Length: 483
Image (cartoon, rainbow, N blue to C red; front, side, top):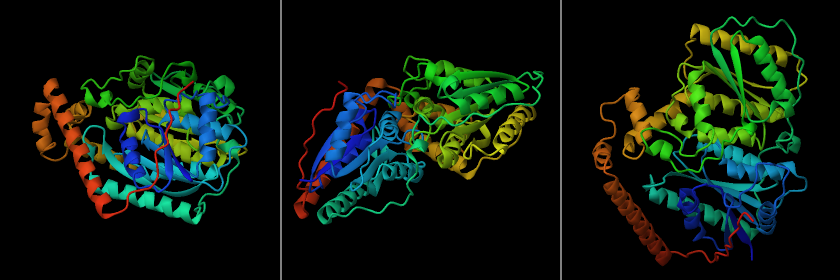
């Protein structure tokens, strides 16, 4: 019998809203299905390593007819633990899933969801899958979905599409042209270029912080860009190569939002790097393209900046972003990095890509951008936010206003910085904030709400199965451990 494989990438595991959505959808499948926790497989960040857990996941993908990527939105893409899987599939030869179907289930606050799905569809199609559809659910880890019935109906629709496709032998056509996999592999580091011209006098009193995912000793393009910045800037330039720093993946605990201090609970080097970002005047991201986005070392760091994405605390700083090694994919990766700079408060003056590495103007463009960055930090350029940045800021503002009793760090920041532009900051949420100051009462209220949500969902499901036909598929899940 045909099989549907749910590959779950949320670090929240059994507590994840995306898994909850997938479990609901599976009830309407007519074909056997299986859940695999990609995070528990503990895949390494080394794209060349084909560890047993990776090979076991690949074997399950080969046997399945449908793969459903199941994840929460993590800084405009999948969590980095799922990207480890993508990177390995694109780095190693022979992985082609032509004739199979892919779909996605994602929970988020519906910020950039279409963009994320477009990237996951692109990745799926480059692996050979036909992409049949997706579910975007606005989920809260504590209080369920914004619209339960809408989400549940979306689950039934996607399950129905999968059932019909498997019954008819239908595989959707691909919308993206096939690209050389070298552009998707994290091993394609891009070409370096000669850095010449006079060296700038170090007469500035500012500091520029350059953050790269890879070691520049192993990244020719990154090394040339860093040299251009160091040589061309009048200010002090500092470099952080994340591959040489301990910055682990985000675990999705939400405590950077729930606690007023907004400090990440993971004890590694992230908080120290974040502190330095707040001290400098300019910030530059250099990312190597991988799986159509950026390298996993930089992506793991960006996932950890979730708190700064909600609370743009880097206002008053300037920066730019460069994406290397992705050829035609570099434009998207550069835009992605520039967008994250903007969302955390840093004004991005340019998002560059080496795209055509033979273009003689690329080296000159980098040098000119360095000079522009020096002027921006010195002259305090006034640059209006683009629509995307404004739209995300408004969405997070409204989210904080509605759920300020939970998102304490976000609410505290938004209130302090007068980011609410209407009289009432939350209505009934204001009362809930008072109640939630008592930890014991908070736990009771959350537990009561979770119980109520589960009961209501089961009651709706019973009504549907009485009047309609539930799926005939069986759950054949086995545990995939990182052994």
